[in-house]
Image 1 (cartoon, rainbow, N blue to C red):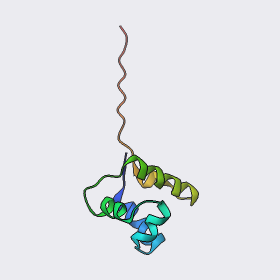
Image 2 (image 1 turned 60 degrees about the vertical axis):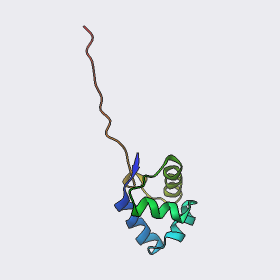
Image 3 (image 1 turned 90 degrees about the vertical axis):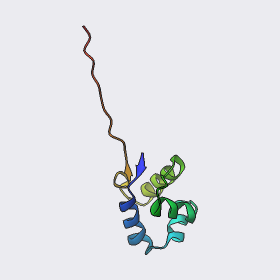
Image 4 (image 1 turned 30 degrees about the vertical axis):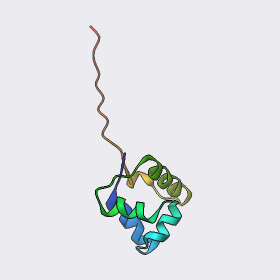
Amino acid sequence: MNVNKAALKELLIKKFNGNYNKMAKALNVSPAQLYRILESNSNAGAKFLGKLIVYCKNNGIDYDKLILLPDVLTVVNEKE
C-alpha cells in the first residue's frame, strides 16, 4: 500500500488551505512526517496509512482514492 500523493495534496489544499500543521494535527501525525511524505520520495508507513483511514472514515471521505493498493495477481493452477 502507498499513498496517492496527488490526491493527498488536493485534500491538503481543499480541507486545510494548504496548511501542513492543521492537516497533521487532524491526522494526529507530525507535520514533518506529512511534509516528507508529500514533498520527497518518502513512503507512508502502516501507522500513517491507518491514521489516514481513521480520519477519512470520521469525515466521510473515500480513502480508496487516497491509498493505492498493489495490483494483486491471481494464479490458478489446474490440478491434473
